[in-house]
Length: 140
Image 1: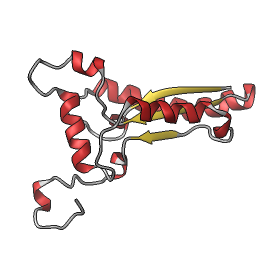
Image 2 (image 1 turned 120 degrees about the vertical axis):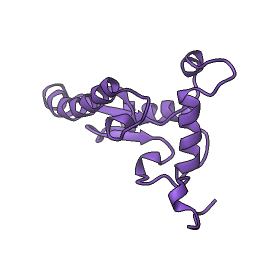
Image 3 (image 1 turned 90 degrees about the vertical axis):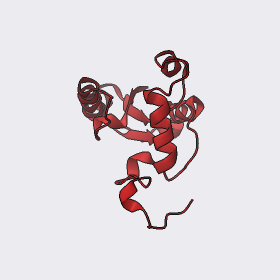
Image 4 (image 1 turned 135 degrees about the vertical axis):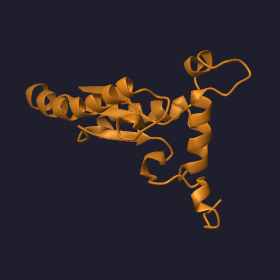
């Protein structure tokens, strides 16, 4: 068997406006994933993983935004597209396909991992759209 949870990059990095309580909860979730991978794996043969999904458009995100204004998720999506190695939209299906893999027999040897499904945003140490990088050539 397999178990899967969802987390967010705020467990590792400061995301202004996201909230400290949720950030610490996500960090605890990632730690619990590793601990449960050991315990559930040894006792029951169950794999335990988590997916750290990047910002994506959803009905829930749209519901908390003011009409006609960009909300937190919209701004996070813009930031992600401007700064990720893969500058493209992220869809729920991308996260779903990764979940399908982790829950399938194809991942029978994968446990205790946080899989980043975020177009590579987690790998970036510095925002390339930062004004401090003006004049430095970056690929389009």
